[in-house]
Image (cartoon, rainbow, N blue to C red; front, side, top):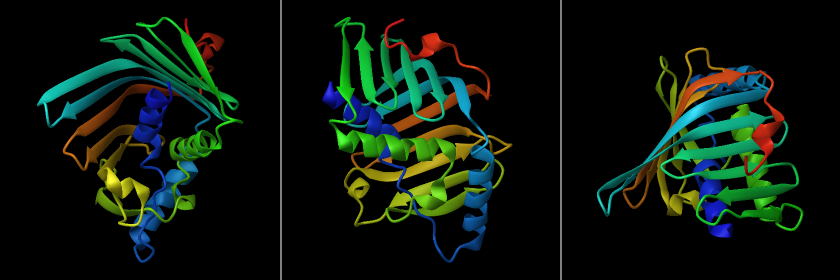
Length: 212
């Protein structure tokens, strides 16, 4: 279970201790605007398509499913195709279920402080608190419309061992992400697209059940 959870957190958290170039006023202004707008988003529900291109095997893995996020501290990641898998994060635990084992497994965050830190960082990522995440990445403004930012790990960061760059694209209104692209050092790439996100609407309690 730990391996699956770590892989999930790497997708969302390895690229979130981001920094911006201190002498780039334009990037600073963009991050300020994102933080203001994304902080107003209290909940998000969206379909997603995740494409993983494996350079070594020249294969593409395509996952489809749904994501639900409720501030503070709730996230549900459900894969419906080509297999069924669910991971739910609460303020106290991480739980997962998969179709093959048909078992629910849970990890206590109180007993795993490293996971707790990673999840806190992930919450900052989704809330747009980029200005508080300094030290590990340089940021470049790739385009204004649509807004695209590229995060490049600094040589001293842990992410530099396996991440070459991360490109984030935002919705036109800047209230949420539209796509994340990760270029790994080994040549693999991951693309995560958010399909028609619904913001600030009540999320059914069923969304937080690991197996439903």
